[in-house]
Image (cartoon, rainbow, N blue to C red; front, side, top):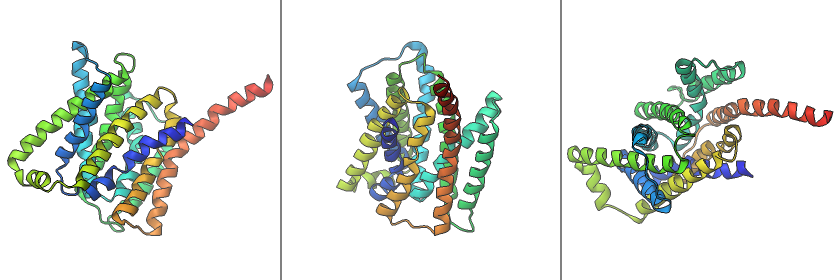
Length: 299
């Protein structure tokens, strides 16, 4: 049941790219990031007020900068420059980058299974993103890589805070801090490039409003509450299975809202990447259950 619940936030996150292109196609990424993060953080603060201790502000600032300010702005750059399906599928490369990061920083070598499927995932991604078979924005691809690094580094910081700061306070204040930084950055950007901001405000439509409500309330408030709540009640391995809804939502929403289409070969590569990202967790789950089943039989 929890795995099915984990698919809900993953699904909403996967729709971010198509919903943004469909409802907010010309909006500046910094403004979109601020409107996604700051109202959501303030709403969470109103639901359950909290105030960090003086010693906690430093790490929460770093978390808000990486997890929210940088990540959200990069997500919207991707949403406005890459096909929705490519953005959704590309984000499942996170485990490979996490593996390399922990190997380089923490000297934690990946096991043979992780290394093998990580290599397979890299090969599949190389084939899918091949410039000879699909034309992709270099800016969007750089944003994709940077967003993945934000996830890896931000997740490491968040994990280190598990026993120090309450999860609701972490969630609330990283959104408020990150949203504030994005609002300041958007204001500075508007001084130098006011045209795009004026167009967004003056041409505001019901479609824009619907897109903002979807991104703020469903993708952020509901999505992040369910994400943190579920992680308290299930293993990361089990939660990973729910994450399969993310790239699938990216592919389906791109087809429905943007009429995106790819060749059968490209869809096969996407399916291969999704399956490859899950196989290490599936193998680990089987291995963990074998000793348990043997113990049950022997008793």
